[in-house]
Length: 261
Ligand code: AP5
Image (cartoon, rainbow, N blue to C red; front, side, top):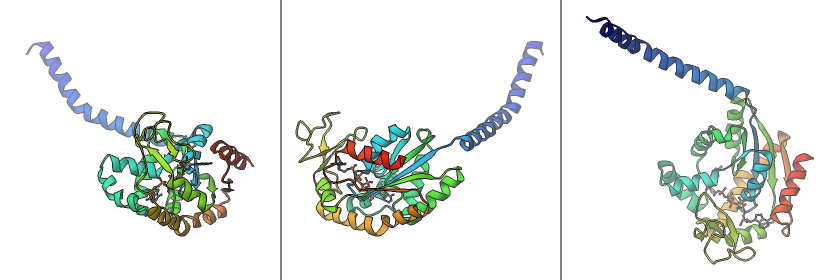
């Protein structure tokens, strides 16, 4: 056999033997490095609590960049899954329409998946999660496993009449990447039914109708409000009560001051 052919065959045989070992080594190495990095990162997590329409989403979009954290809204994630008609979206569809809570196990599975995404490397502002004591307990366990904990919780308290007025007059941009909200009375889009920012259609959310709004408020009182005591006991709760005439910017300033104090 010519020498060059013999060498080529030998090289081929070596590659066949060593490739799986090298691949395995890469996998294990990658896993170890990722685990190590995961341990040394110092992610920060804050929670926004409040009834529907309290302004959690509005505040999160101001607070997240100010604290250099990413915004995670479970409601937005569920609506995105529903719009994409995923398996998960199909399971949460009726809960979104009726304003009832998505079961804890499903919610926790999606939150865990989201928080493992690179955009939450430094942590996140959790808007609308947790909403039940079991969710809060599971979050605590999950964060403890990552060497982290909830750093702060802001509870937004707004008068019920203002909540109902805001929600029943809210229009939301249907473009999920934009999601800007408007108020039909105080802040309507410049052109009726069209988003000022991205020109997509603006529409009322399925759950922003009176019969669903009252159920959402009731669910908040029974399921979510006990979390104020849960986080007060852990000494990470700040309580903010913006008056109805405060602008979004004024609420943001109030919350920032409360967090510093
Ligand atoms: P989600 O989308 O989280 O709805 P929500 O909690 O009911 O809250 P909203 O988004 O309606 O209100 P918000 O507090 O964010 O207020 P916003 O900033 O928009 O959840 C939807 C559904 O998903 C739930 O019903 C449930 O089925 C499910 N779900 C979500 N998380 C879950 C979980 N953890 N477990 C189980 N199920 C879950 O503001 C409201 C309006 O007020 C806006 O128009 C805004 O422009 C305006 N506004 C805000 N601030 C001011 C101000 N200072 N002055 C005047 N207007 C203001």
